[in-house]
Length: 214
Image (cartoon, rainbow, N blue to C red; front, side):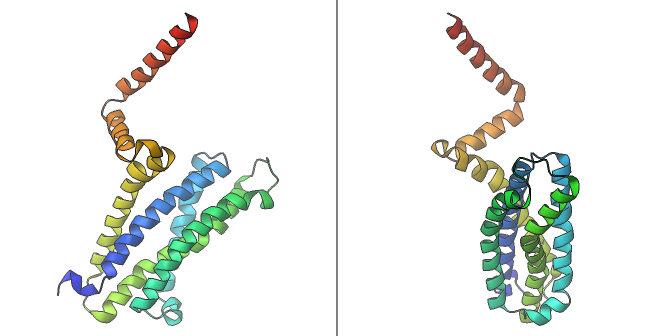
């Protein structure tokens, strides 16, 4: 049996991994912005993501398969729904805070936890459901399809998604004139020698200050 015999399920899993990692990092940024975040907010985000994703995975092994039969067309529909949910939930995270909480107030622990759990739930549940569901789809076509192929494809997608977000999307969208390669080069230069990068900024500031004084 060749890996290409999965009917494209592996490619769908890789694409889902790329998208889910980038979406997760965007969610982290949005929640930190909404709650003037710290490490507690980050911990709540990942706690909700992991717990809700686990619930989605458990559903795929039980009652979920009775509601959504494991077919390639249903897998394509769920993947499209994930893409739609990612955009809708970013809007929800940004817009629902002020209607729910008093504008300008400092939200407590339980309020923050409830807001994160409620707004992240649809995407986290569905992305947790899709991974084992993809394996079921593949095994309906090939009963001996190895489960580790699905998880290897998911890990490859996660790594690729994190790299794309860090070196392309985050800086390219905030600095369109510089393109994608220049921000990536800056990240690499700072990682190799952060002290030179800091001293360069300081020297520039000193020269600007000197010109101002003259």
